[in-house]
View 1 (tube, rainbow, N blue to C red):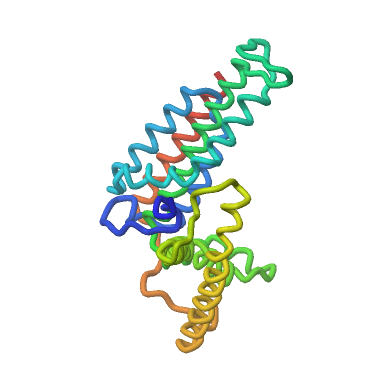
View 2 (view 1 turned 180 degrees about the vertical axis):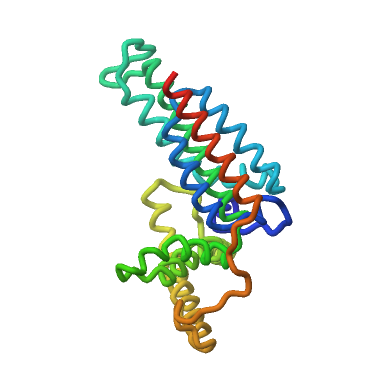
Length: 266
């Protein structure tokens, strides 16, 4: 389960999406997320799915690799579907037992929200899979640079966000190692009720927190040894510059939003 989480991981390959300006990809991801809430019906989701499938093919990231990341949200997906199925009132009652009822409207909304959540996770993971941590930091810092005039430390915020995102797969890998070490010593994380399984996680959490603090301390020492001073007088090996391909990507993303807005108005 832990290895199925793809958020925060980078898939190195040479593709059109990988070579785009990180600012375009970051803003495009935000626009993509907002556009999901503009979709009025499943026809709109079909358009978004086609758009996402084209991006995945162009990015050269295996589709199975992105779908694998959905396994980590199965419980959230089931919980969301259950809430909408059993708690949504409607006129077309399909099943009723005491205060629990299942309506046609509830099933429709549950499927609608489930598809939205799946597309949201797949589209968001594509950002980190096609953008290296350094590019992500530079892109976020550049987008936040106008706020420097009001005292917002844009570079520090971008660095913290990128490090936190990059530490997700590292901590998951560390958790997997600790669980295997505990299971080799006879620990059981599968049997028993919810409370018993929650208590069995305590031997994992303690060494995980110790490992996380140790990694943070080592990272701080490494940055200090390299005379890191935030964004002050910092130079970059690759300067961010918009290219013709970036403007084409902006037009394509804008076309998606316009199509969804027109579909909502019809």
